[in-house]
Image (cartoon, rainbow, N blue to C red; front, side, top):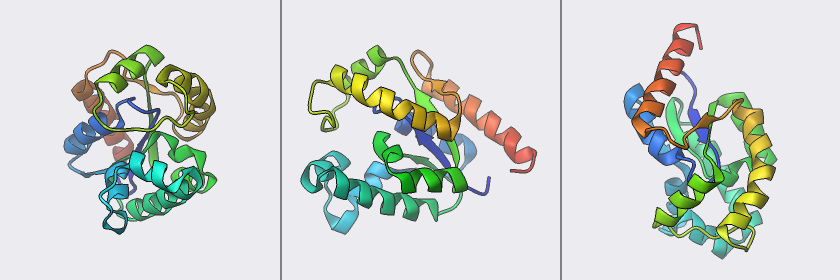
Length: 178
């Protein structure tokens, strides 16, 4: 695998969890874009805090710069933020330089996972989490599909099993001359 494997999907779809397990299975470095954003100017702020502080346009620019930096690392497994696809520059970069995998889950499971998630994440829509999924989901899912084809459903599947299946598929790609 000569290019990064990039996981995209809505918030709480499993990008970080599956990404860690997939990186281990492929014996690659795992990179979480949200963690990389926290390194911005030594701020230590979470991606959610940066989004709130900077505002969405400036945050998306910072996210695009950070994504480009991460992509230059070569073969890694990279978990992105859910909104990375909302910047045209990111879509072009991902299409040209990454093997993109789209993770998705049912709205109910995304909400359940979000309730259990102790990471502060602002609502883009300003409404409640269900409203956000109903607003953001229809806008982003076609963008994810344009990058990674059909989604890998994480609704009821075990993280390790998903990672193993993806690793096997990626191994087959490598064997066929990726």
